[in-house]
Image (cartoon, rainbow, N blue to C red; front, side, top):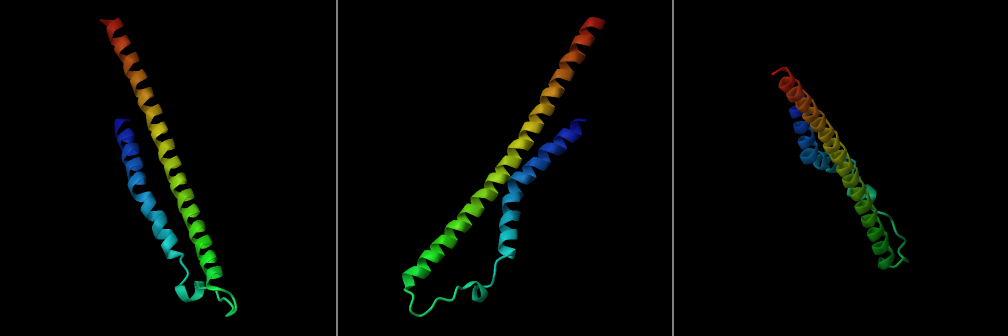
Length: 105
């Protein structure tokens, strides 16, 4: 049983360290090539309009990144809570075992 708890801790640590990188890799693999992602603007439109679109796109990317990090942190917190519950259960079992051994002595 203790091996399983050790495994849980290792699994959570791997999530903590590698999940943020995997989400960034996934986002990068979905990127549209620069030529396809450029938005054609009519020659009469000012460059300021294009800048505002680019800033909106940048804000959207930042929001997506924040959501991804939030989900990652939530997963980590849930895993830590699960491990804490398992540790509490182990401590209770150990206390019960100690009580039983004291009663038999």
